[in-house]
Amino acid sequence: MIIPAKIFKEISTMCRAFLWSGQASLAGTGRLSWDYVCQSKKAGGLGFKNSTDWNIAAMGKYVWAVVEKKDNLWVKWVHHVYIKQEDWWNYSAPVYSSWYWRKIDEVKRKFKSLIARLQVHKEEYRISIGYSYIHPSLDKVHWSKEVWGRLNTPKHSFIFWLAVHNRLNTKDRLKRHGVLDQSECLFYGVVEESCEHLFFNCQFSLSCYHQILQWLNWRTHLSSLSKIIRWIERASNTKFHKQVFSAAIAALLYQIWKARNDALWLGKIMQPYLIVQNTKVSVKNRISYILPKKISQRDRDWFGVL
Image (cartoon, rainbow, N blue to C red; front, side, top):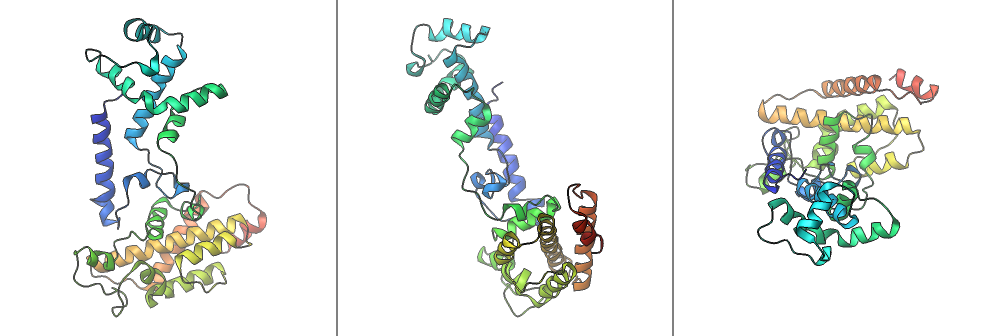
């Protein structure tokens, strides 16, 4: 079934409105292009589908059916009524034809080279193939496994994702956009609040960070998000250890950001030990609930004593 482009446009507008404003804005959302957000998580996006491109890819299935002259009543009908003896690729839909038929004719040229390739390799057209063709994926980012780790709490991963892109609404960004006049750190008022400062240079956050390192017996002095991600990637620890490290970093970022928002909007400064405690509890509860079955006894014992 072909859904009118107007409806798909309304759906896209609603998604964008939620992502750029309202509740998402309170969570600290920064602006990223919609095309980038619609990239896969491995390519740095959120894995949303571009509804317009998906609708076009769905229409490509009708183009394929006409090319292949599929044995069904609809294909026989359009060949008899519309196309007749004309070449499909050179055919132009008459103005008196139905809306859906004009739309199919309009998008068919987008798929000409793809369909030719599928015919050579004797493959069937699928909507997912058509979507990948008109909405190609960007190169894979190195940090996707850490940000979207299986053991991460989803809302923690989302804040992690925004922090990696430096799109959290920290006070330095809000000042640049003319929203605030002052940009001093809410925890350590002398320095400007930026993403890097808030999480890894502020003495308040560093206190929390070092306690989490000690809890995990994580021997590193790195204090940069990009360097920490690289360290997790290259560490010689087991896969489960790396996933726990990623989950802990994601949870810590979330708890610090939540504490920062409480300080901004409610005027409450949470003590570092409470942030650390909340981070530990959330990590333990999440991983205990979805603990993978295929992990070594040594990893189980290590996690059990955390």
